[in-house]
Amino acid sequence: MAFGWKVHGDGRSPAPGEVVKPGERLSWPRTAGLGAQHVVAMFGATFVFPIVMGLDPNLAVMMSGVATIVFLLIVQGKVPSYLGTSASFVGAVIAIRAAGGTSATVTGAILVAGLVLALAGVAIHFLGVRVIHKIFPPVVTGAVVMLIGFGLAFVVAETYWPQDHWVALATMCFVFVVMVAFRGFIGRIAILLGLVFGFALSWVLDKAAGQITALDPTAMKVTTHDRVSFDSVSSAPWFGFPDTHAPDFKMSAILLALPAVIALIAENTGHVKAVGEMTRSDLDPVIGRAIFADGIGTAVTTSVGGSPTTTYAENIGVMAATRVYSTAAYYVAAIVAIGFGLVPKFGALVAATPGGVLGGITVILYGMIGLLGAKIWIENRVDFSDPVNMAPVAAGVILAIGPVDHEITEDFVLSGIALGTIVVLVGHHALRAIAANRTRPLAEATGGEIGYDRKAETPE
Image 1: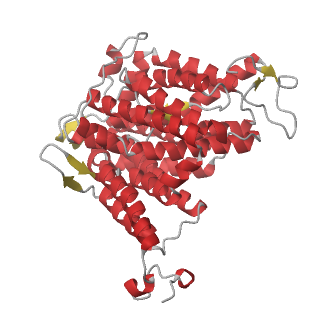
Image 2: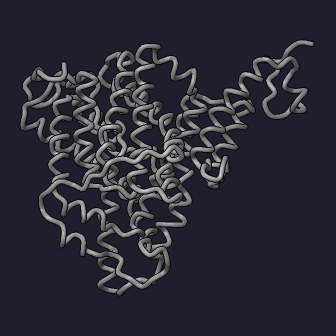
Image 3: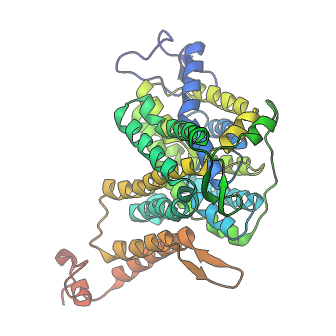
């Protein structure tokens, strides 16, 4: 059931060696405090990524609360998770905008991807979770996650870092120090603290050193300007609904957004399994339902111009630290997030974040996303001495990092992350089929070098 939580123990804290399960709760004041903590944990990435994608951060925060409620209702309270802004679509969004796409085009493409994710969840629910590993083995999911992260390197190099390279460097170093020097909650919000630090540093430099001559992203040329402008903040009202817009559907943009579905399937599966281990519950039967719920959440948020969503590891970290997995805390967090979204002045302040600050933050975020792909490979012991694994992954990652453009027609170009994903997915399965049917030893084809496995050699 989604509601009707049972009070755990004395309602104050989990008993030694126990956890507060999803269907339980602490006292309401403590549950409210935990809900607020979940809001802070998700807040940094949930409003940073919309800024990077050129979407309204206020609307993203508000709709993340709506999506979280939708998610909890669909999974019937069995999977405690918060749905914040997904980073998996950033590369696609950058590519869509580079091709002249608007925010409506962006949200239309992501909405369709959300529906595809929901359909994948339905298929997994009825066919079983093993279908994920068959179609998207670890070598493929790891590669897709990696190329989504590393494929964004050009955004840092060409857009954010040139706007103020010294502030970008200082912000990056500040986040490094906070991540390492502080454990627990402070360390987990290092990105958020880095944004605050960089913002404050930019304002101080405006006052102390004057304007900067650098790339102005609004004019797309080098100009002399303030690092921080509060004009939009002063004109924004305190209360009101964020600006919304209807999605616009273009096939070229949709194809760019679809590769992110693979990463989201892997991400959601990993998160559900992690929660299952921590709550000592078998949640494999609800993995399909959770993926379906995430897809519906993304479709709901983007239907009004919001950002894509995904289950958040940051909030899983909070649960691990507190041993409280109550979904009641997530309902509180969702309501608080919806309240934040109704304060346009706050959204305007977030949108005023200087580009140099985003450079220092995104260089870490994009790199961390890429390294998560390597983590998947390591945990699953992917064998890169086998060319079936090595060749398509090597090509796909380079195509994404380039980013390389491949023109299909004058009106349709596959590039970067989308092109790399197709090469990895199709290439891996095609080469595996060829390898399964080969009639001579691999050593004969490779000269006994890469990929040669004596145990697999076919006798002549």
